[in-house]
Length: 429
Ligand SMILES: *Cc1c(COP(=O)(O)O)cnc(C)c1O
Image 1: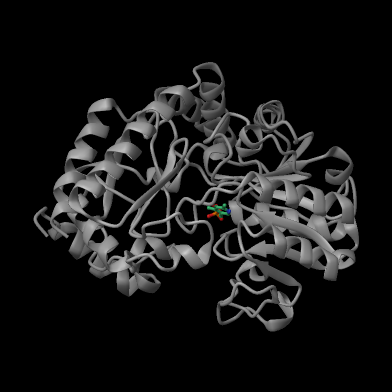
Image 2 (image 1 turned 90 degrees about the horizontal axis):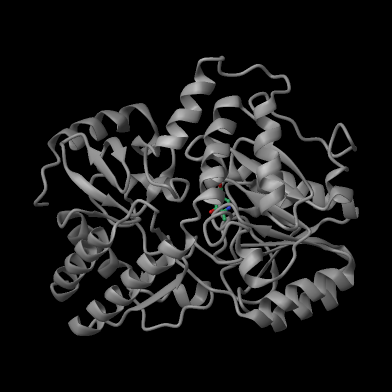
């Protein structure tokens, strides 16, 4: 590696004796690309600085939350004010109303919302609610979609056939996952067949309305409409997992751009502005089944945490009052076409898939429409591309199967620097 990484190496070596794999979340260990992760010291706008003093253009942005860039002044100010009042009370605070109101105003399908502490908690609670509300057991999910580490959702079918799922992780029992039905993303016919066969047992369908977690994969309109039609006809709930897409693709989320109304929506990432948070919401008649309004149990000591609410509310207010979406679209379009051209000029078989400020360069000719397609990517080449980009000062998601994020802090110059780096790197791998 050309950039210096002595301190990162030392700290990460120590981390490995302290935490499993040296990390608190597996992707950070760089397992998919090899080598030692950079240990980050601080962030500023579109940049992060590691402990060896390297400055990198950051396209991870904490895996999505930092849509305004690191240390945005309005978010800093809101958090600093909240900090002076104390961290947590386990009692109602006005900050919760503020964030809930912002979410309800922004996301058309959300009439009531419950704040939790992570995206995982949001999806776990939403599927419990779907089951409690419908009195049915089966949840449909799609191979390659990630909904956090909820036991019953930690399943991805090895084949595209509609099968009742086998667990993906040791520790997830067959019993837990037996009510999860795995289908192929963008495959409307499988969805119709699953509802014909199991319709009266299906409580809900959960999916990513633009997938980020197998790289950026875009749903066909027909697929979206089929999900809505089949769930409506059978009385199942349609759950948009907008933990990544919410407030990123548009202020109203993916549901705004696709024009499809879900019954429940899960949120996270941007709604916390970089603090730990999650949320799930939807039709009031469904949400009123949650304790203490209803009987579906869900609780949290730190839920609606005042500091997290302050960071989230400031982020959403900024997105509402100074919408960056046009700028994000322009910067992201420039980046995507620059990457595609760089790939073509270098003779690499690549396709760049993008919606708004989420995108992936697949080392696969494309199009990538489902997990089976994505799995054919040349991940070793991606690893060489990833390290080449780091050496050129660009910090990308450390896996072929993650989307990169452009933030409102990325300037035209940052984008051009990134494209120039890609031209170099792609020509030499
Ligand atoms: C990140 C993510 C989650 C999980 O959120 P955590 O806060 O990491 O628990 C769930 N669903 C999607 C679509 C995500 O991108």
